[in-house]
Image (cartoon, rainbow, N blue to C red; front, side, top):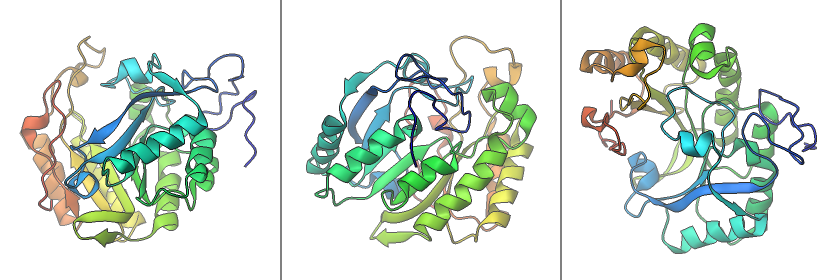
Length: 295
């Protein structure tokens, strides 16, 4: 793919921004900015393992969910500028720290530069994880083919109304419904190294307050779109209301145990495998604590 930074159409929003002179809807230009690079012990067990996942949190985001808990990173693009070479060195340093994988978090708007960094380092011998919001263009995914071992997308919204109200992207599901099968095509069914995932697809879904039926619709689609043994489901219940109240009153409360449990039971009925979540993780400032048992 040829990428024109002067007229960016990299993500599904295709805003056409001149990122050489300013920023796009992702709040970023051509300078790679990272907010954090460190071992992270609280991803799903098959990702974090004993030593942690080597996470690189990229600044900026094209999705812009109203309930985002990382607004300082996603909206203000707070972070440190690095070159492609420096980014490649960060990957190797995380590997030296015994990271089980390199976990690239919200890096879609930097894909051309990330690809360059990955191609620079043949000494990288641990899996690469693409941790994203699920709102990915075919161009991004084609650039990543052969470089990413594990796809870790969110599957957030089902209806155009919800996606439009919460992320200003009514086409979210239509985009994600094409992206996730493409991710599976690239990496295939789960490949394990003991308790660690070496290759495969893990689909995350965050249950939102008052949206349990929509969550079930998303699970129905997953079960119909992919073989149930083709991926792992990570069903999350840690929704935390933002400090500033939102106009949608439902988003100003945590989800009820009934809401989460009804979605979890639906996943079991569909035969989906993966991870559930401790309800105690639904609190501000608490990093999700995933259980290792099946749903």
